[in-house]
Amino acid sequence: MNRILTFLVLIAVILLPISVSAQVGITGVPFLQIEPDSRGAGMGNTGVALADNAAAMFWNPAGLAFQRDNQASITHSNWLAGFQVDDLFYDYVVVKQYIEGIGTIGGHLTFLNLGEQAETRESSEIISRFNSYELALGFSYGFEINENFALGTSLRVIYSSLASGTSVSEQKVNPGSSVGVDAAALYRTNPFNIGTSKAVASFGINLSNLGPGIQYSDNAQEDPIPTVLRFGPALRISLDEDNINEITIAADVSKIMARKDAFEVPSADTTIIEYRSVGPLNALVESWETYTRPDNGVQLGVLEQFMIGAGLEYWYNQRFAVRGGYYYEDPQNGDREYITFGAGLRYNQFGIDFSYIKTLESDHPLANTLRFSVLLNY
Image 1: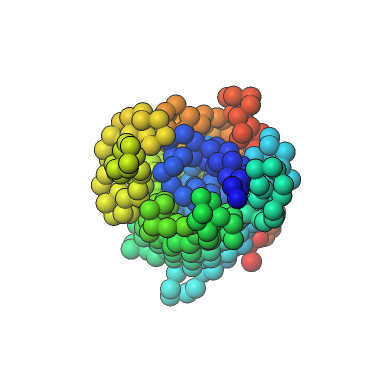
Image 2: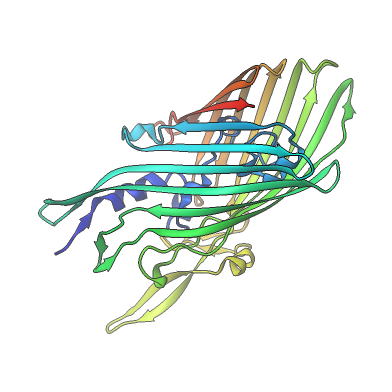
């Protein structure tokens, strides 16, 4: 029986906008790269040097060290709305708690629902139906070294159920699982003057999802998880003494630190090229070299492997915010390029943010993507 798993095509299409072209075939579970909160998404996918709310658990867990409030937040997005798939959505839930004498700890849950899939025969007869989804559950902690410098870490358990119980090429498909660790740092200056305005500058760095690869059948088909290096600066400027009007400028530079190497496998008639996962520690070194894409053989220099986001945020009286940003990837390394917009409202303990992606290509899968975040300070 030759089984055709139609979900494989859908999964490939779904993950293209997340890690387009260059990342396809390099990492598994790329849902871990989706920027979760609407604030950072509205600022061109920036946040590593901001990290001043519960979403710091994604951007930079070291930012938790400077936070003294308790907060819960949930972000929801009907992912890739252009595909008009009702059961394709993304959720991100975070809770942080400050504990006197210990610091700020937090928990986070990431969930990507990929919907119902059908397993069929060559005749298109449906054999069975199943649901595909991926999730990650983690904990984060940030602690101060001094009043200007902090370190942080996260640990997450990753679970991916794409086609559990089915078979591909006579191999049973099992759920994949792995663990990822983050190592992060954040530096913030004391307030200083820019003309008549007060300002605070910061710089953050986060190496996220460092851990073993994930597999669904055998070790030869193991994929690395998406280890990402993210770093960048931010500058917050108060335009008046009462902090009624504030502007924040931020920029993030990120890079995939996972790798697959090519191996020649002799066969009866020819030599087959297979790609195998490089160990996570070795990949940290190899990822600074020119890389040959496994899908088309194109070589990428180190600079072409970087992804860049920049954003601007304006707050009025800490009640209302408007945001904008720009995101860019090299055409041979994802080819995502778009502008972002966002806004936020705060009232007492409650807050709401939203973000919107305006792609430069009208038919891009990410076009018109909306994210909504609800926050509660308790």
